[in-house]
Length: 484
Image 1 (cartoon, one colour):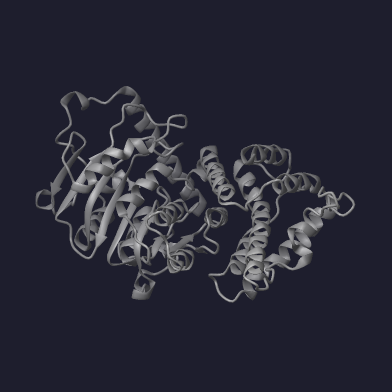
Image 2 (cartoon, helix red, strand yellow):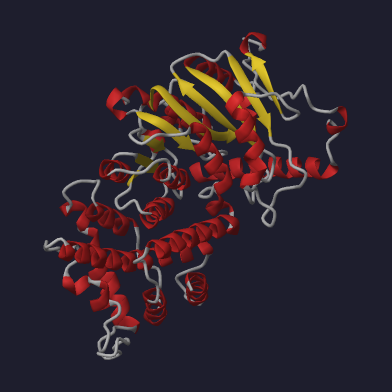
């Protein structure tokens, strides 16, 4: 039911002059979906209050509640066409009354960790792009069919929302940066193994995949007490996101997964000066896939001791600084980080190895990220002691990854098992830091256990790597043009 409803809504938005892409479809579906979800949440809270003999006061004023403006019903429970707004009347109400009302929640909220604040923040970032009030009426009617009352309904809804984000990622390069394959995220979370009570952070939160999966992992890690539930809701997950659409989607994704007021802030993480980070700002766990290929302006680079325009290298400095002593991290980064010979890359590798224990490097095959042939690695490190040995694992699959043949959890099962003991295999080996060149700190993976016949690369692999270099060059060119 959920899946068909989403398809129908996409068909409606495809006809609308204000929505031109999959990104618009997700954004516009999100705000209507959020208001319907909020109405169901209020009903649940009112029922719970009634059962315990308390009075529940609605967050939303009656005029702006879903059953009043969106779907007024007649005595038979069907849409009352005499009362239901449509066409220009509906569009004017949404644009001129509803959105301004919801925006005010941000200034009136008691604190930033309340759902009231999140309502205000979301509607401060959004605008209604659906130009036809008749299309908007159809979208509202479709979403009104959905229910978010039971655990099963919420679970199905959250998974389908994830699918929409994934499809958006597949739709083009702008959306791709919002989506990290879930099997990879789950694997990173398992290896980092966060615990309840630790503060978990993603400074490039995107669609909040890392925070969502960490929430799912912790929910099932033990039998939760009332205190544990409150800790997970309010004091565990933190994120920052620069782009408006990603911020909205990330916040929505967490809410749909059950975190009522996500601690996600709409800001440019890299605009924060590293020298200003104090102990109270630090986190126990960092999980992230920072954007790569981007270029930051000179004034942003001034916030960092190691000056570079490469966005991912600035994020890595930020993560090392913002971790508590003893903190743990799993960070996705381009594989060229391990071997680039420029001064900034060499200095950054030295910083990482001297300030952290880089205990594990997972090398991923090209095609892991749908729509991008760029090769990546995952760095697993702990802050507070220098690196003595690095355990490498090279993920070698007997198939090429792509849109129709994506990474799955089974692909990573051997890595998870071997990582526990840092065991040696055809795909894994250990490098002693005493053996590396201390002028370059080059960490490029050189598998000593690789069979000789594996060394010759297949033509398809070579072509994929050439394509990746072309995409990277185009990305850098676009970034430079955006700065001009």
